[in-house]
Image 1: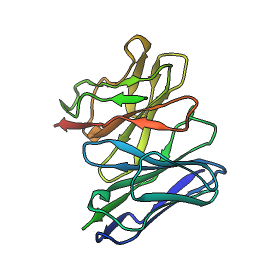
Image 2: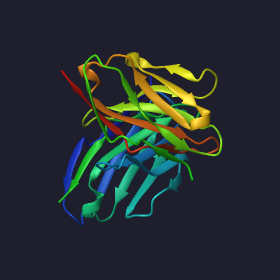
Image 3: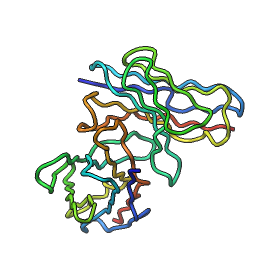
Length: 114
Length: 113
């Protein structure tokens, strides 16, 4: 069966520090991968998605970036965190055949920038 | 651009009462439609999905949703709510031809004992 792992679960970082959140999927190949951010009262905001290794689409211009160094690994990064980067970050995947399939979500990372 | 509207930010119901959570979408064609549930501090779990066919779909935990093309709606229903249903519920659309899921802002459900 397929599983998705996201870590760390919680993170407290000072303003201006770098960020690296990692997501890996097991039990499938060539998934589409997604990073969402959830802020209170604002639902889920799509940040990045990837349909293959090295292929990253950015939805929201900001100081975050994403990379996909391996088929089932998706990394969210920042060189310098802002207070506004605080939120709940969710990684997700689907089977790569398009959107006629559901997304499966990780357990999320709670990021607090102080 | 595609969008999803969940007009109710908070809903409170008594245990055993019926529930309907509203979802409206904006898209030029019929999108793929989803309802997810999120417990505090957790990821999202799929309740049900609609791609085509019968417009009334059944999901897990006793939930169902009805797709109404004329109203661009996909409302979630449950005939009798349990205290464990207290959570946040998200409606989402997947736009055919893209790789993007667009989510609504969510409805937080509170269940009174």
